[in-house]
Amino acid sequence: MDQKIIIASDSTCDLGTELTQKYGIKILPLTVGLGGALYADGLEIDPDTIYAHYEKTGELPKTSAINIADFEAFFAEETKSGAEVVFFTISSTMSATYHNACLAAEDFPGVHIVDTQNLSTGGGLLVLAAAEMAQDGKLNAAEIADACRKMAPCVDASFVIDNLEFLRKGGRCSALAAFGANLLNLKPCIVVKDGSMGAAKKYRGKFEVVLKQYVTDRIGDGSGLRTNRVFVTHAGCDAEIVNACVEQVRGMGIFDEVLITRAGCTVSSHCGRNTLGVLFVRK
Image (cartoon, rainbow, N blue to C red):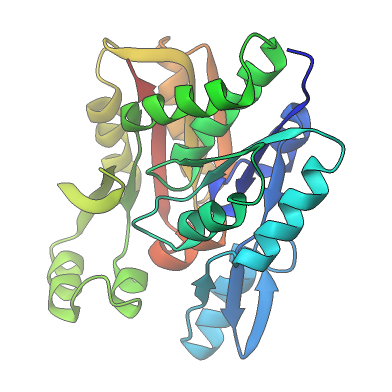
C-alpha cells in the first residue's frame, strides 16, 4: 500500500521507549493526577514517583482519560499530510478513552479506533501486530484495524499481585478481603476477560515461588498459542524475580521472542510494585 499508515496508542499499552521507537509507534498519554497536580503519563511522571509519593503521603493517583480536544489535535496533526491512523485504546469498560477517541475520529475519515478490550501489554500485543502489518504493506489501515479487533478476544492477559494494599486503597477490594488474603499469604491472579478485570486462581506462598507455578499454569505446553512473542510485564519487581520468570519462559522453548517491559502508571497505581504478568495471544 502506498498510503502511509501511522500506528498509535494511548500510554496504557506499556510498550516502552525501545519498542515504540523500533516500530515507529506514536503514544498519546493519559493524565495522572497526584498531589494536586496533573501530569502526562510516562512523560512527566513514572511509577517510581507514584510509589515514593504513596509511601510519604498514603495518596494514590487518579488517572484521567484522554479528552476529545487532545484527540482531535493529535489526529489533525498526524493526518495533515494524508496519512491514515490506526489508534489503540485501553478497554472501553475501563476508561472513557475509547469513547472520546471515537467521537474525535468522526471528523477524520482516515482514523480508525481499536478497542483493545485490554490493558498494559495485553493491548500492546495488538499494537505490535498492527505495526508489523503496516510494515508489511499488504493491508490498508481499515483492514489492519479490523484484523486487530478480531484478534483482541484472543489476547491472554493476566497478572499476579503480591499485596492487595493498592487494590484496597483504590476501592477495588474490601479491607476485610485484603486482610484475609494477606493473613493467608494469598496471591491473586487477575485476568482480563471480555474487557474487564476479574480474579481467577488464588495462589498461596512466597511471591517468587507462586510466580513459577503461575507461569506454568498460564502457558502450559504451548498448545493453542501464537508463539511469535510473549511479554513479561512487571510493575517494579526486584530484578531477580523478573529475571527468574524470564528465564523460565525462555526455557520452555515455546516463544520466538520474549519481551520484558515495565508497567506504566495505570497498572502500577492500581496494583502496586510487586505485580507481574505473562501476556500472549491464543490462536
